[in-house]
Length: 438
Image (cartoon, rainbow, N blue to C red; front, side, top):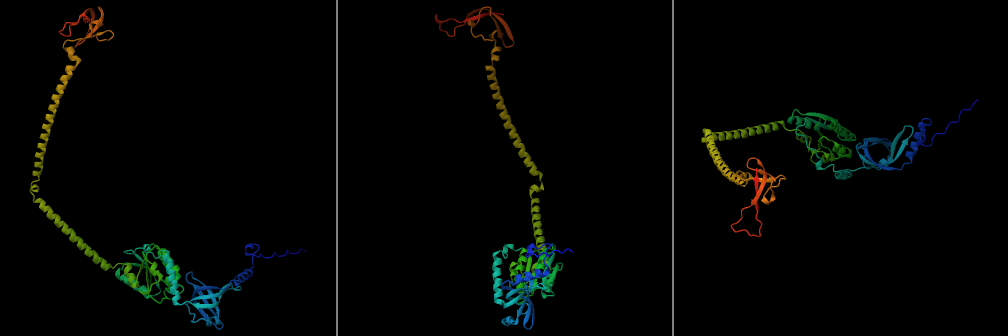
């Protein structure tokens, strides 16, 4: 026979467990009980929501309203005997307790060693401290406030179940504007469930694109009753909403933190109804008044313009409009005639000046000299002859006259005529004039 393999030891740490080497449930429960049993006593805060007193041992449910969590709390009679006031549901307490884990049922509970009810003064002090913290974050800043819509198509309403505050809002709003629609969410408005239910209702309505404004209301109450509306979690939900929110909690003397973070604070549910919808009768009256004023203003303007047109028609120029055209036509004709005279005079002066300049040009022109019978002699090399000594007998020349040219040959030269009456000096050379044959 072959012997079966020896069982492997269980892992010591949770990190070492695998699908092949798991812990049995009893081991996990035992380790949890051992770990929790080593914890030191701790002071915790919460609200008692259930109380079951028995001889020797009492059982409570302690809830954290902000997180909607609860644990079972047990207390021996000697611990309860030291509490000055009865621990009824709704009482806020601070408890020194030792965590305990019952492995067989997997039950985590707190074993109370000291229970101290939180008084009203301490609650108000905590609310004030929270108010300062949230104010420092800017949650109550006026620049964050959103304007309420003038004419909402749909109003979200968060209120108590079968509460008078709901009727106050609905009746007064519909009296003012019968066409307004409501999305109503009835929730707990006090007690341990209030924070969670109100927060969820606001979040749901804020996500509805048809809801234009949200009203959160309840009909007053004690400071303890209004504590959920000063809860930090609820205040932050309101601050993060994108839909304008109206707070209508209690009366003028009640001021929960919801009033500070909301976009508008209404003193009562009735006041909230008046703020979220306009009075259709008053609006129609205002429209009628505005229409009458507009009609009066337009009529007055029309009459004034009619009188102005009548006055214009009575003027002579309006009786015979051609007079204005005729007078302008005559003036224009005079101006044109004057411009023509001025232009003619300037043209005449310019023509005279141009004629004089043309005469000067003609007088100075070589062509004019040639036309008077003179000629220009030029050698075959293109040299212009200015002196008889520049040519020799038999040298061919070219003569340019006013019209055409001549081919010539030098047959002889003779001296030039004296340049002055005085007799020339014998020491000077007498210029000669060439004799040319054609």
